[in-house]
Image 1 (tube, rainbow, N blue to C red):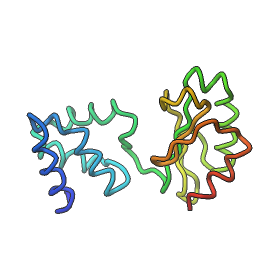
Image 2 (cartoon, rainbow, N blue to C red; image 1 turned 180 degrees about the vertical axis):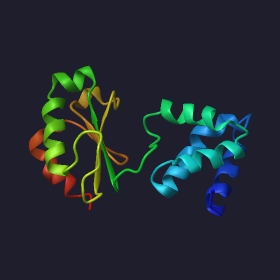
Image 3 (cartoon, one colour; image 1 turned 120 degrees about the vertical axis):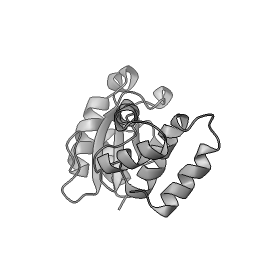
Length: 154
């Protein structure tokens, strides 16, 4: 079931696209912004609004790594593991981020504060290694600064 606000935002978004199906990514982002993730029930409700099957919409959802299909923490940390970041210490950065956040890779910390996810590329190769916390991109990150960075995300 979609909330009145979610439905209103989705309907407004639909006016920007030639077909209802074309708005699927943005519609899922709207639900995710309101709920933190896109549940199976949300996919079913959205599919009906977008004139898609649940399977078609789930295929779109699982294609994009920024659509979360299971609950995540209050803050999502994406650690870039592109070749450039890897060459400049992403493995060490990822390990330190796991320790500092209390979240193992692909998991959420016990307190629900952080979810730690690898990502293929953040597009910040000129500032590698890089990570993103929520929508904040951090470049030239060394493992020693991770604790300080995470303290800004309660």
